[in-house]
Image (tube, rainbow, N blue to C red):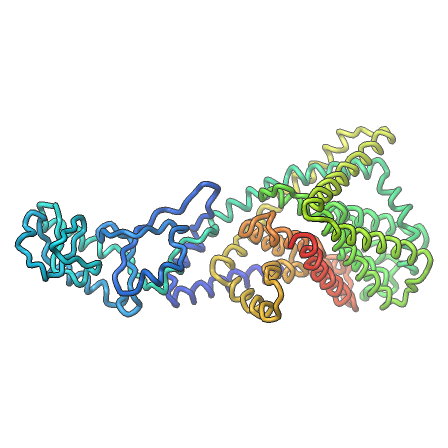
Length: 555
């Protein structure tokens, strides 16, 4: 229901803003929203010829990127598709042109000697040093032409005049084509992106299935259970919820949100069985959801897949910052929830692993910040890609050791990846179209520009404001935030600073409100207590650290 409302409000807001801009003079806005098409490499916009009538217009137009839009000035009135004039002339210009064309003399060039030298002469094709010419058709007495049938030419000019768009010089920017996609092209693009996800999702879900059959999840469970038992003091030793939670955390670490959900629901149901107050969230349930929503990620599969589908030259580049960011989120969630539940964080079984991992990652960040840009790029590539290959090696080696049928296990798991990619197509189409409407209508500018202005006043760099839509929508809707992320990649490029920033923001946290509704709803818990505030604090920590680490690595 929450996603439905968000999606509906996005579309209504975009259409309302577009209507307002139309009334303000942007007569091309509806065309931009529906049928505009983003240029591909080597493409150019369709040529538009424009003719100028009025004083001082060329000085106004020199700061407008007309050439980028393929708008070309012409001296031939009859060839112009657009007439650019002053705001004062705009309202009455069409009537003046029709009156002028009706009374002006269209004369064959062979008869030009009949005109006195002091007459104002307008000529489209010829210039004569004995005649005065003007570039303002409204001031011309005569049109000299090589056409023999001047009456036919007059009729053609009048017909052309009635077809031409007349716009004020202050409105030119509103009429220029935008390098963005309207809703039709966005719908096609959404399907392309979803199809591009199939390979990556199928690959990693196949590997996860091998790991599960080979007992890798059980090994991780035994390693993590002593640590988890300190965070869940109310749970009996060897309670089945530990295994379900580990499976959930493992899927999250691989960035497989869809695979994590079934395990998470099983964990919540197991925890509900020992909950003494079935209508009220237990401490264990809140701790589990806080850790789940913080989303500690080692390999952000889904985000890597989206970056790859959008043409990134190095989709894995966000591996390191996202790993660091999700650790900060998880640490924040764990500390805040433990303080609320009066769990002693200085227990040896908690303090040593957390302190050791925190120190290691702090040294890792220090090491990264000490590298020069070219060395950082080389290390990042080697580390991120090497880590993925190490996961491959570990899973396959474990499967061989356990003597399971590796390929069959892989295929069974990969089917889930294919089904997931196909299943999300309607969601991708719906959200990307809504986000496209927000951007093309100018609604984004209404939201982001004031924030940029405030940031600029403080002297800070304003680029990170472009990532705010992803960060703000992420607690409410993963699909909506994914739509903003993909839109930012398409607008600024997947390998741009903003493209990398939104990738990290997308993976830095979970959909808090959705998770609370889904997981507590699955066990009919009505009183969620302090779960949402704790999870939102973790989200905030993730957003702040995401921006900081991206500036440290890529600004």
